[in-house]
Length: 78
Image (cartoon, one colour):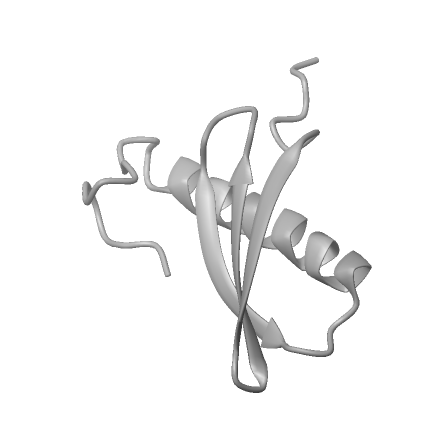
């Protein structure tokens, strides 16, 4: 069985008013996602959301035939 690419996630958080901009990068494959969360969200909740979003985007990329790339191949990642 393949190792979980999200076993280590690097997270950067920047507060912007009442919101938190979160960047999460999977150390396993370099996939990056960006999302916003409430500024008062618990760190555990942000980590869970980052894992879920990484898994979601990875699944979308697989569904696209694996040909989409992070630099603008097919579609875009928000």
